[in-house]
Length: 195
Image (cartoon, rainbow, N blue to C red; front, side):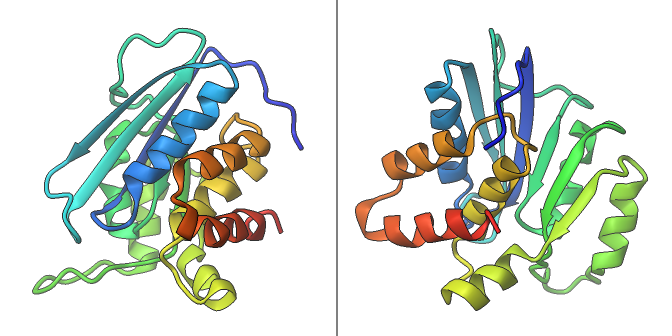
């Protein structure tokens, strides 16, 4: 386990679509940060959060946090659950921002969809720190469902030290937030991200 580095403030934006569990991910990260004694502010911004609509959540934690919204160009980490949606978060990024993105595209009907390479090339104009992870594919193959790909990504991020929170705090938060009937699957997902 990596020691949590002392931070003044950590800014994270999660983007995806309705039905991908962004609010649950927000709750888990916030709860884990709380376990570690951080001050936390969160915000949910969504147009249509029903299945398929764009969803964006902000999480800020640190010594003392005054506002829940992350200003333009101030995200430390952008976590994208879908590639097209990740492009919507570029205004929060700067050259040091890390992008952790699910290698997954939901086709938009009746428009020319960008390819994985086009999305990646556009993001590289802002930051070179881009990590594409086939989270949906990995979860589908190893667990039989891709519904937990968001849990896989946040778990991967804490194991790799991309979010300055101990993995044990995230595991504890998963146990607190996830309903009992889905807990085993989510803990398996958390452990899968370790490898």
